[in-house]
Image 1 (tube, rainbow, N blue to C red):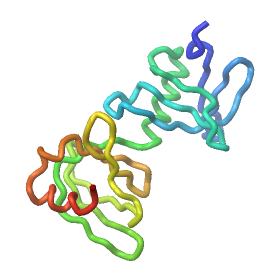
Image 2 (image 1 turned 180 degrees about the vertical axis):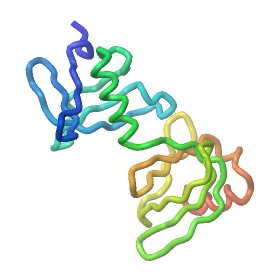
Image 3 (image 1 turned 60 degrees about the horizontal axis):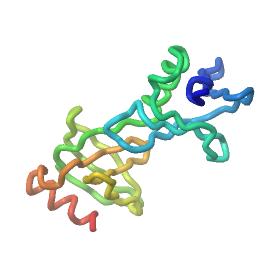
Image 4 (image 1 turned 120 degrees about the vertical axis):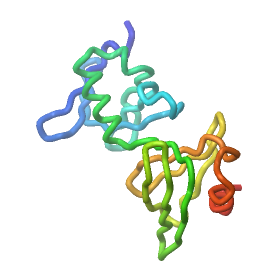
Length: 156
């Protein structure tokens, strides 16, 4: 039997997301896995101790109510915004403030000083802000010269 089809996911009245599999139910939170370009694939459901309770390879394999609950939770867990240009990066006490333009529009976000953009498999860089949202730079060569210069100080 397909383990995904046996998985049930629901949002309980208290707002907590719960997953049930093989008669065992736990409160869970979601963590998207790669690839970032496919937000409905490879979603990990973690318990309070950060142990993986279930891995969902494709949300479309879930029954409709579970799929809707998990799609909502994925959307709430954080976004992957496509970064197109960087206007400024200002460092303050323990915080770095970014002013950027994304495919979704202009944004301002903050990262911790010790959080650096990280290279991701398949190319590009990923930046995680303090709220957990993700900013993906698909190709450094496609950024304008000012954006490349600003970002270059933070990547190897």
